[in-house]
Length: 269
Length: 264
Image 1 (cartoon, rainbow over the protein chains, first blue to last red):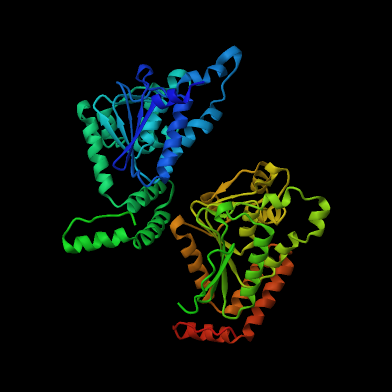
Image 2 (image 1 turned 180 degrees about the horizontal axis):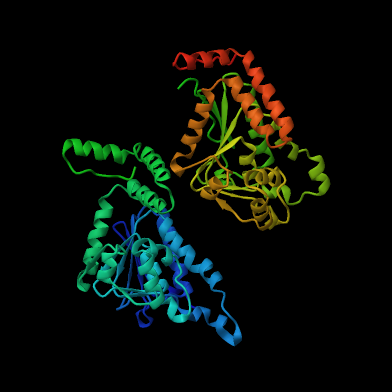
């Protein structure tokens, strides 16, 4: 059992100027995710959801890797003496809620991918809304190497971005998807030289901080929804969302600023 | 807006009128609108009062964005004995909802669990927010649904899914509830009350007697044989030819103008 301090060390947190920064910090084991880290990550995201001082979340990692996936230490007991672990329970209890939290929370989550993101580490990175990659970033569906199939939501996202054939190829071979390749197929948003990753991430965050928060939030909800609706349903949902946003002060401010030829000042109302 | 009557913000059930729509809102946010006996009495009284009020044509029953109602008030039930339950005459109150003639639209967001789910289902149709969650988790605390859950849920979603929910306590989110026919519409959480009000206002603008008869007809579909129900429907249909609104509606249709209904 890890102490609370150790868990805090493994996941660094800081809030500044509307940004909650979360940093995976176990570089010695390529930031493999332990239960205490997952728990802290989940708690921070849940808190950020309600915290008016947080408008954007940034997830990054220390060292040369982004994240090597689940720390198998938590499962060790499951493998002892002829036992088989219940990975379904593990996913439902730990990884799925975290991934669902990132996808469903209305504040944007920006991921800075510095290096390799393997297994559930790749799932975690790809679950974020915006992914900025250093040129050494690489996504690996390493699951097959240990006799498993993709999990934590990644099968959903890769099929939708890469198409079925490419997704199967990478899932079956665990061949890494390099940053530029990931960019080409729309899996990530931007690739920059390694030393510029922080700056590029910051630029993205600045842009999000300037945007009207309600519109940002409902846009995420709307676009998430597009993954599972028909065209007609989606157009109706657009109308419903627009009905809500049309009544916000920020909408009025945006229109007024446009007519007055000045930049808008959004307040999230 | 004519005759908007404000409600006392402190009371546990807020009652107001918006035009021809009566709005009843559960207002115990600190306990996620748990349905105590006193809340249920106030809800039923409010529904009955609107049912008697000639100025009201449709009723909306709502909770908050976070919870429609998270269930019964467990502390009232925990110590009860069989004879308490039999003699205290708290459960039969629910039957009075069924006798309300005017349509009741449930505006459901967040938790609609146990008694909350049953209360939503006791209404004529449910408008849900996308955050709505339905469930009958009574099995987890040693009992079962007792205010219509086993009956109305089964009629709404079918035996297999109702068994799944009632026996395991699993919850059902808004989108699934829409697919399975438990709810009529799902809208963004910000809009659920507006949407329910819009549905109620649309109903309120229809010919009132035809609305009551139509509600009666649809309700009958769930508790009698097809033969009897079809015959009943036909009689209701014939009856409407005694109303001025039928003449007005059909004349307006022929003359390509908007009808003006009088409730006569």
